Length: 218
Length: 218
Image (spheres, each protein chain N blue to C red):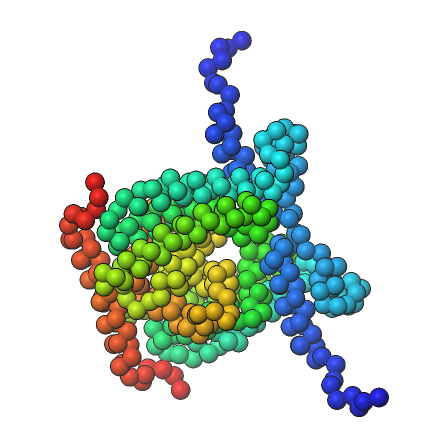
């Protein structure tokens, strides 16, 4: 019998595996149509074995969403909060968030639509964390406005639109095709920033307004 | 007994009512967790009564998606195809699509995630229509590039990102608050176009690159 070189999966690795598998299934089938049994089978364990880790399907969803927010905190919030320049902070926020979403096992961050299925206390916790993330983004836009670098855009609409571009990524981006995950993240940051920064935008808009509409068809 | 002034709902009105109700329920619960019985009850008819209009839950989903694409065709594609200038065509496409999505009963256009639940033939039909719409958007971006008005953005990433901003709207926009549907549609068009147009963006980007990074924290 070989010596036991491989230790059993650490609790955090087991948590990650359970969360990723559950996220993938819920993403594909919807929360209502996914059973604990399905998830246990996909993990290669019994339903009772899975219940050793979770107390209910709703608790599992809370765990998956919490795991996703932990990733966003560690890989987006903490590093970008250390960036003083709001423009660079915004760019890094978009790039880092987009890269989490496009990587393999990105499904854990794609379950925002399932929040209403959470029990009230878990829903409040997750909503509070999502709100804090939204505020980091929106506050950065407000800071850009204060320093005169934001165009005439509403920071709330802009913040939600940036999140929309990022959250839409898993619906179309595919690993191993023409566009890399890094390239797409950079492109989206360029789109967001290019659409937000003064004074070029304001100029472009006034140009648009004075341009005669002669090129439209009747 | 009063004279029959109100005729029975015309087939097209009945279709709209069924599609909107089904869309709303599928949007809230997910396709897997919504039964034909639930939808019939919400419509105030029997399951048998609903089966008079549809053959299966999958056929109903196909009908809802087809109804949504009919709206996009009539209110976005047809009018914007008549606009010769690609910049104005893009602006109108974004504004018109955003307004469909934000209005009451916008749920019919929010079921794109449910396409995999369609039977193969219906899935091909809907996917073809969605693809034609995507091509209209992407071709407009390519036309802007050809005429030298597009910044250094990838038209595919830009097209999907614009759709992401629009499709994300129902997740945060609420009627009757500070922002009107018209204002939000306009803001999103400004964001998209401001982020796409030359030459101001290119200038902004080079400025960013040469700017010293002294304001970052250590």
